[in-house]
Image (cartoon, rainbow, N blue to C red; front, side, top):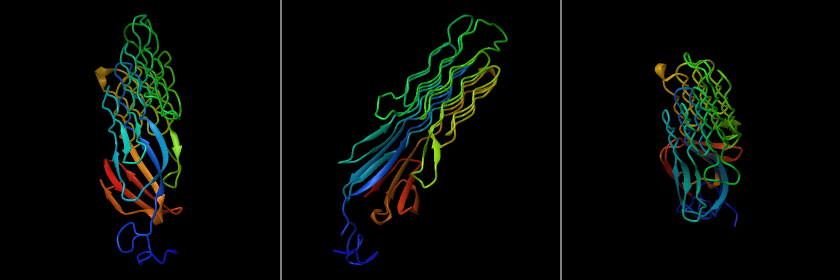
Length: 293
């Protein structure tokens, strides 16, 4: 039976929502909150887990969307998730926090960079990414902190870079914080945007660069930079806690894309709605909410 018009009796929305419509596919991008950077030659925070999925959904299905927060200084990020009856739940893990002096980075969606060592103590290792394991991988490992035997003024102390959606963070060098890993690009919104970059490692001399996709730069003797909000990027590590803190991880984001003709218009949580994106309606959730198909 042909569709007669946008609001006629034979349309998808005629005489009650759902009339004439059938199941349809939704593309999902689910990015968790990034982690905060570590302190005292601290490692960069790991980016939030980065996952995609395309699934067919039945009509009148309520999809619950959870958007994870970014972690504060020395804290891991929070998970993001989509879930519904009849839908395969997709959970992206929060990024692992950056390690501090002699402290390993934590595991997570992407791993946090390891903290520096002091007085011949080995630099700590980075945390493992893709934890828990998913296929494809949701993020890379953090880099290791540098080993140094130098005392005051501790100019060699440096932490590793945080892992990102695009790979592993870099190991630190003497006086050089490790760089955060790059994020991954997606064109789900109609434009190519890179998200979920790792945070740069902090150093008393030269902080590491935040990874492309929202990761914060590591501090050079002071504060680490905050990651860009709603990218899931990791925060930068602090060089010297006497002069500042590590950066905060970026809050995550969940994005849905579906055919314009299938979009129901029923949401909670006030997502940004863009229609006509190559024939698709795109919902961008920067906070938790729901979409009813």
